[in-house]
Image (cartoon, rainbow, N blue to C red; front, side):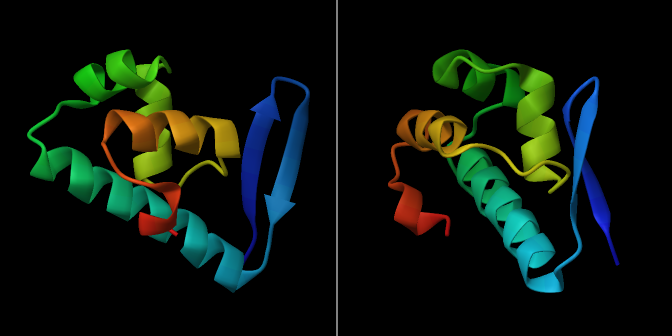
Length: 86
């Protein structure tokens, strides 16, 4: 199975390794669980992390392979360390 990730309007990359796909989904699930544990909406998390709300949703659903910098911002807003979601 291959998953296509949109990097920008002109470029896509493919993740076709099941382990990588599962990691991306697992990270999203952990972010969502922590957000809900803190009773935060996606909108509040996006404001606190300074990233677009729709990007939070796509990360939580495992639709995008996000950057380390974005993960850092999200984890900082969720008061956790990156290692807790990996």
